[in-house]
Image 1: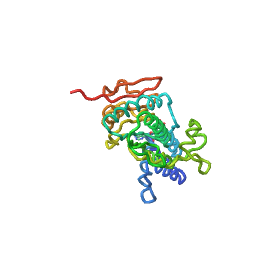
Image 2: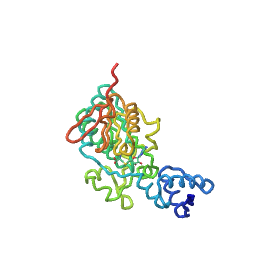
Image 3: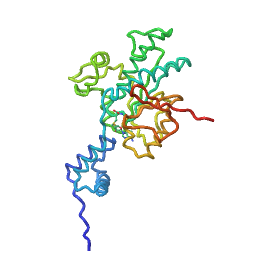
Image 4: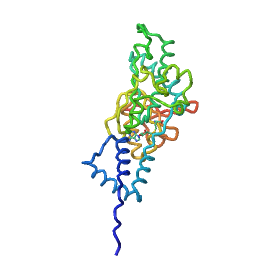
Length: 288
Ligand SMILES: C[S@@+](CC[C@H](N)C(=O)[O-])C[C@H]1O[C@@H](n2cnc3c(N)ncnc32)[C@H](O)[C@@H]1O
């Protein structure tokens, strides 16, 4: 007769570790009164993952929440965004006298992606304005975004810990390595030995919790960046997400995915744009 294996014991230290991990990543805190829920779920996970300790489960979960990111990641793609895509969108918008630009960084991790994009857009818009000035009074001090243009960047993630770091906007020397000195001088200041994003730039980025697997996502975007996120989804989930992105973009809007990701074979509703090693996907309109 087979013996039933005794459940693996959960130590106090392991419970604390997992409580903290769940809280940091999902924002759910299981206090003493509710810790039996957590213990029960963890026991089941341990069995499914065939692990022999809760410490191993904590390590596995930490590795699953991959938040790796950096400033100006995939430069050729960001050059495409700054030099071609943005130029086209700004021209199109100005013709319609629509001066509102909306960008969504979906899966923004600790904020380096949305802040990089904010910097690129501020610079591009200032240069565009130099060539296409508009009869609006320039307030003093000169704002980062020349009026009547408005820029709104939504930065979303499922990791509360990442969202908090993004909101704080303070980065170490190591994290700042890809940021050149001109850019550091213009957009950062030194606070407690770290580089802190200046308030004017911070004000352009709104951090928010969004799970990409749900239906209620930010709409009316001109540009969506969802880089190095879909790689963790299966094909069916990727297809669903691409369909959602189509609906979340304005007509003619652009989607940027990670360098190891592609929409090839997943949809007919986007057209690939490739330039100098940078790739983007433009929303194709439904034909009637
Ligand atoms: C590898 S990072 C990529 C960060 C940034 N986009 C970049 O390319 O540098 C992946 C991010 O996606 C987030 N993420 C994973 N699944 C998600 C989901 N279902 N909804 C929203 N964000 C998710 C993770 O929390 C993580 O911060």
